[in-house]
Length: 320
Image (tube, rainbow, N blue to C red):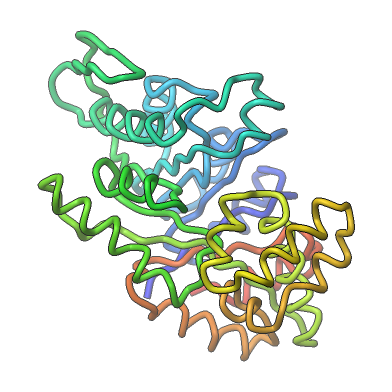
């Protein structure tokens, strides 16, 4: 079993931290990005200290053009010993409009064309010509880098775009038991497009380890409440399995009742959407999740509310 890890939100990409991350033997190390940190810069700091694959999870497809994304991924490839996995996604209207000041227009089409163009730009052969609905590119040479494109896709239309254009899928907040059914859309669309349907599947696995199981489960409850409460796409994904619970969480979150939103996360939701417990419990649970079809490489994601001690312990306990 291979596994990845998402760098903690609080991580500062110092040499000591980079060496610490590289020492745990994860097969892939990923960096997220919303505000305050640049995923490519963070991974560049880690690159000299690991042979693992390096991935972005997740950079949005609005604030950088496909050419800029391809150039950044190719530059990172020059620094890294392992391959680069460019995780891209449409993000949310809140992040794109209120932070970047860009209209949240046609997100699925933008994901589709970005994935196609980045793959063409990093193919290493020939010159790129592309005439899409949003982007047109003429007569620029492809870059040479070991880059694959992973798409963060929740809804059916974005999963179809993943099947048509991407090398891998990065799901989050889809219950682990529902991943196979959701992936069938990706697989079917890939076949229809004449592509190999065996895409890599690397889901976020929210994980927390503590001496007391309840403390670990509280961290996962907070993570679930935040995503279900603040992101409509996440709420819809969770509501396929937990419709009433997801609505209660979202209503409480919208009302500013964050504690009530966390309390509305049930035990069944924690088990369906995360890994929590003592070291032995968490390792056993993580291994069961990793064996779930169609997962190829789960990504350990420690909730931002876990605290430094729990974060470090979780990364160490769930390392290969």
